[in-house]
Image 1 (cartoon, rainbow, N blue to C red):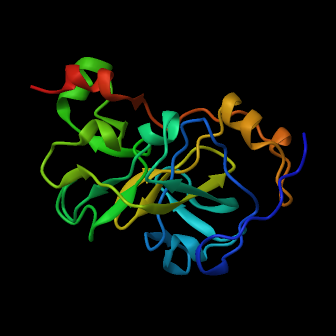
Image 2 (cartoon, rainbow, N blue to C red):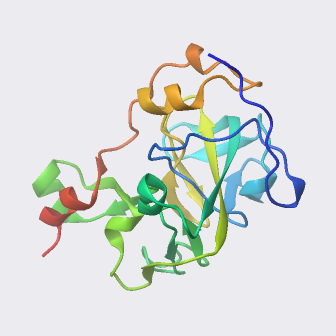
Length: 209
């Protein structure tokens, strides 16, 4: 697979390469604070090797950080990945601690006893866009927005603004779109097993009243 060139993000920040287009990828936005071994760090300032707090395996190293621009005129899969604002406390007390914006396909950890009845687990990763309409969760429009995503060795549940969300999920489709990046060989990484049950909009319906 051909290596991807470095790409400048906002304010000249460098990433290991572009992110996949035409695939559903999980993205943060600049300014979102990620909990690491050195404290809460704005996502855009992370570098490979930074150790990120995960829900299941303690601190794990970041392998790669990628950037992707989203324009207001986006169509197709990018339009479906329009940004979602999750206001402070919308997922529970202090979760998140302050407003954060993620891509529509980004999964957040959701706790609901009804999930056990429907899916056999008390918590699941649910797409942010599936939660639109709940108090404090809304789709927004931006003329231009940068998305940032974080690849770890495994798919992980990580802490962002004190809310549990997901890292980049390396699926077969994402691997093909991503290719190789200068800092790692994605072909050497196994396809990720989702860290939790992942639900989309239609699957969530049965967990609602």
